[in-house]
Image (cartoon, rainbow, N blue to C red; front, side):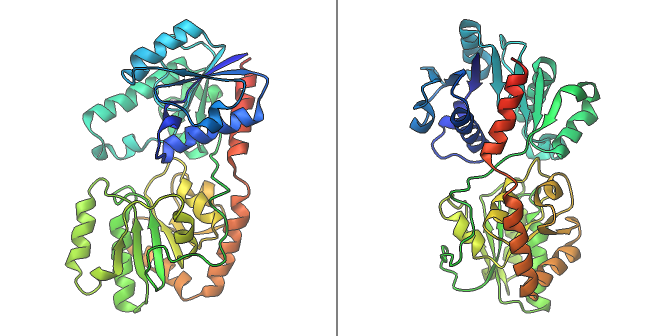
Length: 363
């Protein structure tokens, strides 16, 4: 059987989020399956660890754009794969009937203001394409599948959930983590963009409340770049002159430094308003973090019993959860252990096996 995959995102040099998903998915499928042939459509050279597999053929375009609307349709019409996997974006013209689409989240519906008009049109176009053309639709969480079926209940039978994995070589317990930011003091860590959806503003306010009322010795590390409405967060920090120096704006942290930063934190705070999956939670659990997160969307699905849950709209609830961890180290230790145990339920190999089973069902 010939299987075509859009692997263009896996060719990105500094992979994050979606790019890393495509890279890990393709790599692990190839590790598991040596009997079928894979056509890897890309507009940049793929990493050697992917192309070294004998049943993988890199189909490299000289032209990076227009990728989804022109180049991919051309390749699909020319090569005619038996099954086609589109890990992101719309399913192109000339894709076979046995195509698989992937839905990662509905953030563009829940947080429309964070997207430009073009981005919204592209997202809606991609969803219509996947709903219309895909023989199977993969959602990365049950929460995302539920969101999909609210708007398209007619596709219930072809929508399945396959959860994500994480890099087990990088994210694991660290007994003596490095002080990567040279803070030399205890800290609370929040990883992700500084934006409305990540609920950064409420986290900062809860932190300032603990500094003022309980005199906690901690800093708050915001490990991420600026996102939608980030200026409101910066203004809140600047306005609180007494404790503004206790908020560390580290910017994006490279993956090779992130595990130490997570493992060294007293608390990993992830009070997001909405997630399609919530991969940072999984990575934090694997490093043995004491996690606070929201009881909304996919987050309980990922963290299970390995986190303290809060109402993300309630700053008091968030502050109380932070204080509970900070003043109860034995509770911290218990949740760290739970996180490590729960993270063992997830892996990219498990994700790839589920995708491969889906491909074989379409054979």
